[in-house]
Length: 234
Image (tube, rainbow, N blue to C red; front, side, top):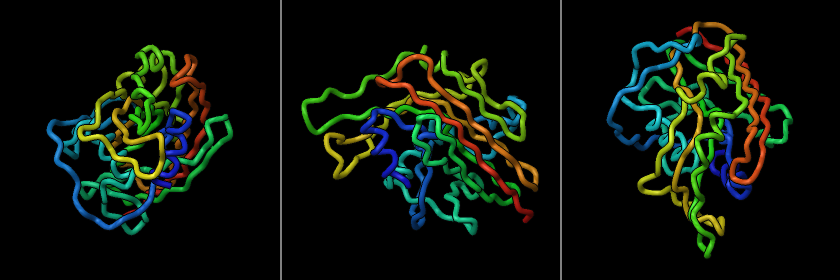
């Protein structure tokens, strides 16, 4: 899917990274950019554990989007997953339409692999014509977002704590988008996502239910996505 779905959703002015959710694709390994700072890795009870990587949450989101648009090549592991820093998988997301139709994906991880998963994301663009650049949405859109993300029935993210998983930043440089006028490039990220510690060996169920209660980039979007995640022993 990679950038194709993102572009489709950008023409509708939104992408669920969980929208982009995007998820992704494969490609040869080139390199991953270096990011300063540390992140804490959320666990299923919402607490934080020691990080396994030096990237911030925003830096993971930037790497994810640059990869999804085909600008950043990341190594692919034996399960077909994009994996960065030798231990963190960029989890794909179902190609759901945003009209409430359920989406599902099966994902296989190896024991010891952490993961990044965008849950609800907006991307801003500049344009090839006279259309002004997309403006950031007010924080209230995310404060009022009706979102629940569970792993094995345990709530990890909901409306009460969603802003702990929120990040907003500009892409510097912008992500160039080819052959998709009037979109010229992706200029900012605003959304909810997680970087999660490795799961135990076995089969796990992820469930995301999300709908914005305030207009976001001119619309309302409803998602009911699930993942069956199998963690294999080493």
